[in-house]
Length: 276
Image 1 (cartoon, rainbow, N blue to C red):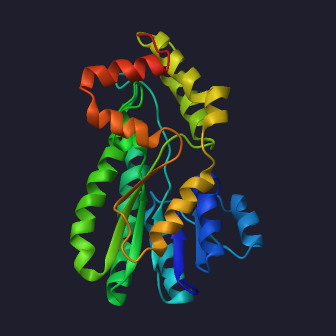
Image 2 (image 1 turned 90 degrees about the horizontal axis):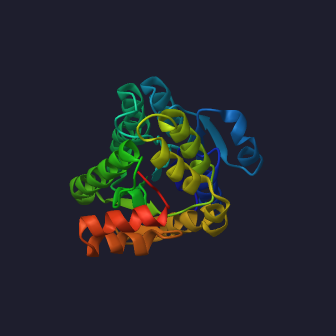
């Protein structure tokens, strides 16, 4: 794996940072991309190359890919990790915010994939890793727009896998469960702001409390669990199409597959102590 080049988006913290470190430890030349390069300085000190990139800005994405090709001549691994969780009742969330959620979580990853694919095809090899979520297979209250983006990433990844297989390119979906990052607190704050008053206030408060609770923070898995799964997928001759990792991912995805919808609804509602 020495001298293979990897691009990791959303690398300033959490899963992205852990993944950049893990790939670098395996000998990759790693470009760690984020909007704020000041948050990448610790990675730079360890030999990882910081890259300013806003995945919703086409010029920024193009410039980033061009820089990597100019400096290394190749992109072997793309990890589409940039994203965030915009929580709020569907009735309350402004459509501009819903569109922004899709711009970051779906269209940003799709555009970067479009720009990277020609370089992978020319070498007839490459791995695209799309960070979805167990939220791409299950549903929870107040997360409608977030879940919609992750369901979309699941479908796009499946179609992309079929399209690129004959070109020697693997497409892998990672479905993290509960991970100890800033994600839960940010989602909870946004939820309180959007739906903390009005018709859904009680429900929103319960969900926000569950998202940011100390109990959740203690039981969630470290981001290195996800990074290890990504490294495993990248190193595999024939990687699995999906890796469900982290707290709750496998049992909840299985429960969603097994249970009738209304039974799963009741299970999720009780689990978060929500009340409508």
